[in-house]
Amino acid sequence: MKKVICEVTFIPLGESLSLSPYIAECLKIIEKSGLKYEFHSMGTNIEGEWDEVIKTIEKCQDKLFEMGVKRISTNLKISLRQDREPSMERKEASVKEKMAKE
Image (cartoon, rainbow, N blue to C red; front, side):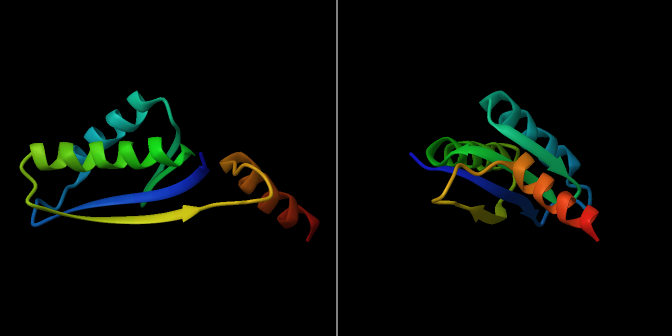
């Protein structure tokens, strides 16, 4: 299995201007999955095995449809590595280290 870091953004189309009720339900699903995640203002980073991450994203989409959403735009960015397992903390630490050198 492949470990991945992905950034996902769910955009329920045709719904109210406030999307927070929909995103809150998705975050409950992600949290319940046990996967490592970081929520931020423009999306959510999820780290874990490929199959589990994709299954969790699908559950989030299913929940949005259950909530009455008719159409969802899902933006997904995926980071893979072959030389070592990806880690959100390692990526952040690497950038901060380089910033401190300047």
